[in-house]
Length: 55
Image (tube, rainbow, N blue to C red):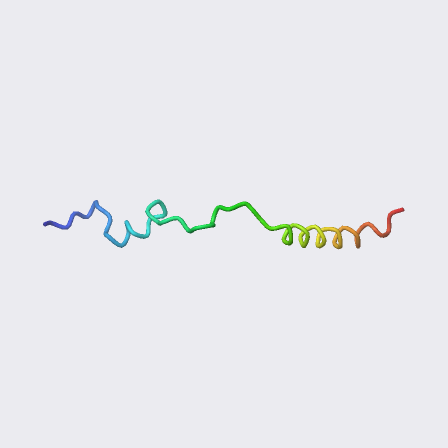
């Protein structure tokens, strides 16, 4: 078999993004109620410190 320079090597094919196996849970958009509450509290505390001067 001849080595054709126009074809990718085995390593190049294996590392191509489209040839990678999907990672379980990578595209999940679900989050827990605890995570939502924590994010909400962080947002409230950040906006609360900015809005204390306004009345």
